[in-house]
Image 1 (tube, helix red, strand yellow):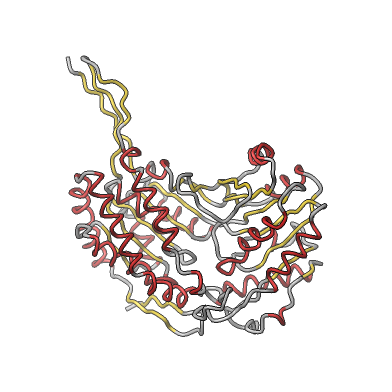
Image 2 (cartoon, rainbow, N blue to C red):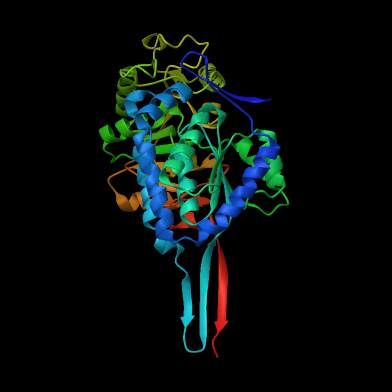
Length: 460
């Protein structure tokens, strides 16, 4: 039987191994999901959200163990305490707005007619979750999907395979009816077959551009709705009037946190020429102070990347840039744990970069950032838009109107002013270009997991 194997980036050992579910076993569970969903959808919204909230509280009770598991599976240092704070913020916001978001839209209630648009659950929702934030990314769809009355199938990344089991454990403890939530261990091939067989009514996928294309190919001709959050190359722009200390602290953290493995992490920074030298000097001082090492050590601030192949790609981008004329500011000798052969990768800041270099064009998804000097808003806007991706953009300025004006000209899903690398659950999470399509969180997050049904009832 085929195995799904999680190789820990800490030491290259096997941390977890699970058998792939067979098609026959999956078919049985899909039937149970279809049946269970009908009764689940009949329960009041308040009952459904109460169970979701209870499950999130159950996850919180497991957090000490989960934090250690995350360190083993994908390398995030235990000092950061896992993801439960963000999970609670997102899930509790979505359950708190469920009643109002799912309320029918009344058009007329007169002596002659009752007309309204109802929002009904789509049925069975597939969530394909990534390894970089295994709980945060998954809960974005799981919480609203269940609150809306759907059944949920979770296929988690092999790299963070225990996260799916933790979700299942939490929902069982919360009293979710049997069959409403399933954690399945699926191969890529079986996932594609199930999608092609119209096993699901909505699919949310978070992952690579290549993975998103594979999902679209699998769904072609099925008319199954897809939401795709794919790659990113998120820019930060520091205007001449910015608070430079706040900008440096936040943007460099946004570039390096989680070893740069963040969907909305900062991958390129444009700084007004009047602040450029000071910004670079301060950024270098911050990164020089990081400690790369074992993520189980509370003193570690930067753990290994989740897999050797990810580190290999970032090393290649850095080398290509330096060979093309970029200057690397961080001395690798400060990070002896990086031996050049495993997942431990020293952070790097590059200057003298341009958009001919892959490090400023392709997704890096690692602890490296390029910093470029600009002379005007117009130049910064042109460079920020010179990308195949569009997830977020961060603008640093004291002028709110200027940030809004610049934001309207940037092709992206979210505009930040004086912050970055954050998801506000009251705002929709969305992207454009190769970053994907669809929207999660906010009131719009309920649109993808429901379908409208019109009622035109003549009374007379």
